[in-house]
Image (cartoon, rainbow, N blue to C red; front, side):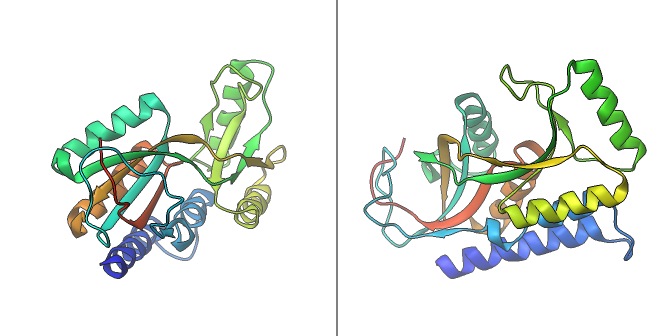
Amino acid sequence: MMRWLVALLLVANILFGALVGFGGSSRNPDAQLLDLQMNAQQVRVVGGGQDQPAPKGKPAVPGAACLAWGPFAEADAARARELLSALVPAEAVTSREVVGAPSWWVFMPPQKSRAEAQRKMAELKTLGITGYSLVETENEWQNAVDLGVFPSEARAREYLATLQQAGVRSAQVGERRGRAGVEWLVREPGEAVMARVLEIKQANFPESALGAIECPAGPAR
C-alpha cells in the first residue's frame, strides 16, 4: 500500500515538472525554480513509530497509506481543510500537530519601504524572473523579497547561481526553521485525489510539504 502511494507521488512530481519545463532546452530561472522545489526529496516516507503524535477521532487501520500535507498555521489549515472537503469524505481526513523540517530560502533583504521592495520586484520582472513574492509579515523580514524555498542549502545555492547569471545581484541564501502547525492526513486517497492535492498545493500553499506515511493508529478529528 505504501509503495504505490510513494510511486504515484514521484510520478506526479516528475510529470508536473516536465509540463512546466516543456518547450525546449532554453529554460528560464523560474522553470528551474519549480524543478528544484518539486523533486523526489519532497516526497518523505515516515514510519508510524511510537514517537508520532496520534491524530484524534476514529482509529485508522494499521498499515494503511496516508497522504500527509502541511504543516499549516491555523488560518491556512482551515482553508486547506476546506479544499480537501471537496475531494474526499470527511471521515477520510485526520489531523495532527507537527513541527516542519528546516528549509532554505533565496531572498532579497528587507527594503526600507514597500515601494522600494516593489521596485526590486519590477527589476526582477524586467530580467524575466517570476515566482517571487513580497514578505508582508510584521517582523524583521517585512519588505523582503522571497525568491523561493528549497529542501536543502545546495538546491538553494544552485538557484541563487542561476539568478546571479540572470543579473540579480542582491539575492542571498538563508536557513528557515521548521514551522509548527497542523498537518492533514488523507487516508488511502487514490491516484486522482493525490494528483489533485498536488495541484492545489502548488497553486495555494507552495511552501507546504506533501508526502506518504503509514496512517498512525488512534482517533482523528
